Image (tube, rainbow, N blue to C red):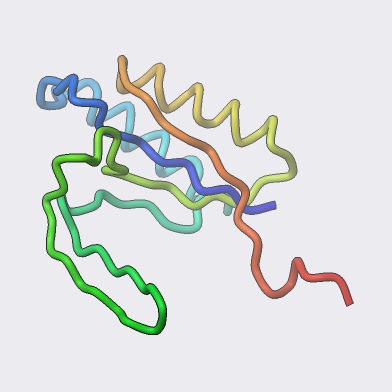
Length: 115
């Protein structure tokens, strides 16, 4: 099962990571990579570009978007056996980075479609 674990920016800016946190996060990422659990990880640019379509008309709007109160700022795509395993990995992540918020969502692809 694949899950997308996302960190969100709820406006409570954190301090820059210190050396200890960076070392712990590096070891955590290395462990997940070696075990084959971590498929991709990264941070996201603030703002981005919004695409919307209505009645056949496509609109492109550049950010930042003031109404985006909890924008996704980072992600990890993982491949695990269960949602519970994804939650446990997320708990480990938050123990390393400290305060914050995130979302875990299962990712479905063509191989998940019955038939």
